Length: 170
Image 1 (cartoon, helix red, strand yellow):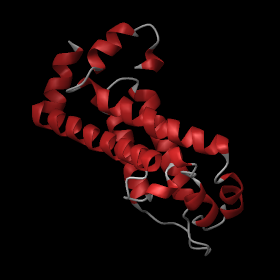
Image 2 (image 1 turned 90 degrees about the vertical axis):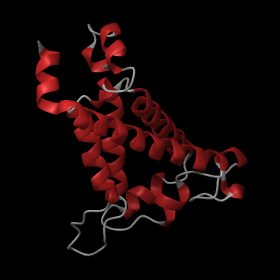
Image 3 (image 1 turned 120 degrees about the vertical axis):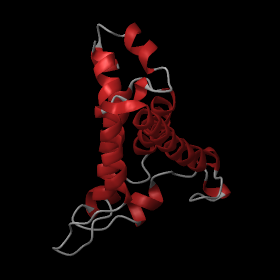
């Protein structure tokens, strides 16, 4: 019954678009992970790659943070734990989105990460409300969560059946 209602409400074209949007977001997170890990040259030079001893968070947090939270972000930028947590987040969120599994954890974690990255780049002025790509990505992740986008063109349905007693793992 629920599936029939979802089909009527969402329709096949919207489900296809949600699946595509999920894949695009997955690529974005996974590309960021591999670029920082290997120094592919997009935002990380080869000599600054994590596998070569570089820090995936130092430049953004310790040098690029602005606004009212600059001190906090400068303090954690480039630290080993911050680097590990950031890289695990990029990889985990990317895999969750790609496969359509653990979407609650993946999309909520991704939304928190996007919010923190947005907060790290606030202007230093009192007029610090801004909407940038981090806010747009945060909203896209929430749409994917509430639309149950892992159920379309992924392993989400099978995964939901496996973890049906632990719905927080969906």
